[in-house]
Length: 461
Image 1 (spheres, rainbow, N blue to C red):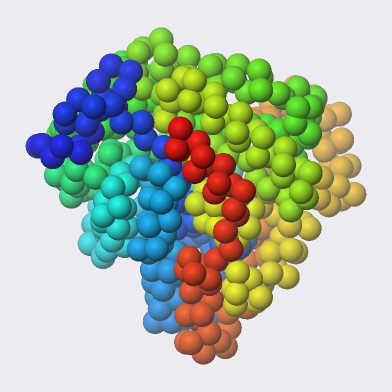
Image 2: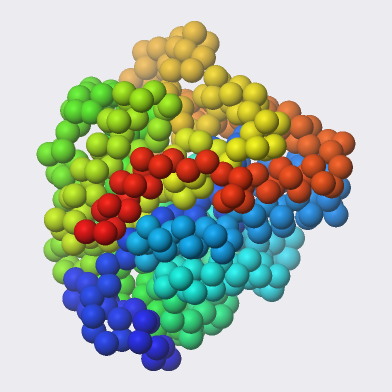
């Protein structure tokens, strides 16, 4: 059992340490690290498809050399020091199941998968920073999009008991490993689930919670609602020692967002609307008297000083709202190639992949970062035809307009780009591969200083 003074538990509407002192977790998500995402590290489509193509180009040994170095460079001692210096006390760590269990050998835990996770948890602990372990990609994919390493638009996880059994087994192993680690704040077992029926997730959560509690009775659970952590009606009971996690992205802060204050795709957004949206998204938590924690939020940036100033204002308003409600938070994301991170890679990686990343941007191949207007001359007639022929079609989760883009831009076009990305690695000597990976080490990165200053100011309040 956890008995260290820093270990956390839920007490009413707050997290507290072992002495009963309130702890409000505020920090960053480590997106793109042990769960890679296309807009974060510059590749197209989903992680599994990309890795298969890169392995074919590099061969197994050099593939392992490159990705192990990338994982090592992406987060190190200096990253933890930077975050601690800002006042961060929490890092949410997204992981992909593929590091810990394979489709070829299901139910067999890969011990080496814990090597980097242990390293970063301990680096954060040394700086007084808690970790929340977030299973971001589940076997079969728990939602319809790239960030669950989904190569399609079907969340097969909810259709097959086999995938669910594997996740329960994996969480039993994770919980058993970290049950006595006081700087692990807790476990976020399923990121942004998308169960279209809404009928499978509730019983599965009941089963998963029991299994994790049997392995580790002490750590806090951070549970996402259905439909990308927006629907909490799926919870059939309020589990003990649990935080129910909301995600709180502002529509005006998306790449296709309009001015702030102003209209985005016909919807008005200002500070009052942001607070109204937050209160709606946290109604379940407030009604049940459980802690408020925003697992993900944060605008994307364009490079246009006027637009980006509005994005910083969105963020400042959200942080003020969270302060007023005593809500914890984890901003998305810490490090990337320039869209959203506090810091972003430069150097050899951007020199080699910069034109390719620009091509992805021109085609709108990444869902996160697309204005939804790229290639409009080609896709516009298709949108119009489907709207005319099927006006009542509203596929889960976000409707026809998004579904068409997902299928054409973010699956078809994105997958067509994968071989081109992999070929940019062909023939490179080992030292150049390592230099590409080292572009993500903090000394080689550029800091988005206005964002860092804004967050540090909020954390200092």
